[in-house]
Image 1 (cartoon, rainbow, N blue to C red):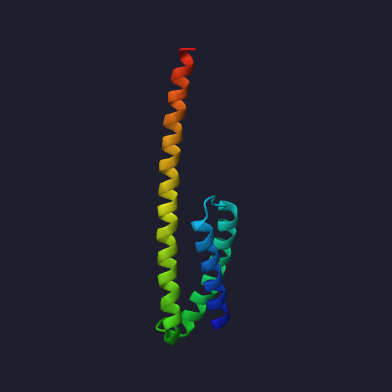
Image 2 (cartoon, rainbow, N blue to C red):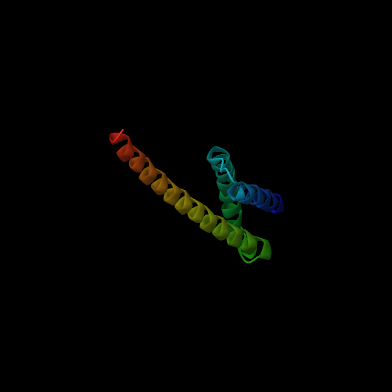
Amino acid sequence: MDDNLNRLSDLDHEIDELLQAEEINTEVIHQLVDKRDQILQVLIQEASENQQFLRSESWQHAIKRTQRLVEEMQLKTSGIGKSLQKYRYGNKSVQQYKKFL
């Protein structure tokens, strides 16, 4: 379990760094999230067999990191959506100006 928790923590750190980057590499983030999901599935299975693990501090930290990463991804997605709206509006404005040329 500890090995999987350490791998999960490492992946969380990598994902967090990628989310903070100027240019977000969605393909790499997607791959890391897939790996993270696989590890979580193993941990959840192990947790179902060991109720003490569910109450452990390391598992509680993993849950909090998961919540934080989900929130960060939602913020980034929302920000990208707003940028896309601005781009589309700007593009429409350019098209309007081209009509006059």
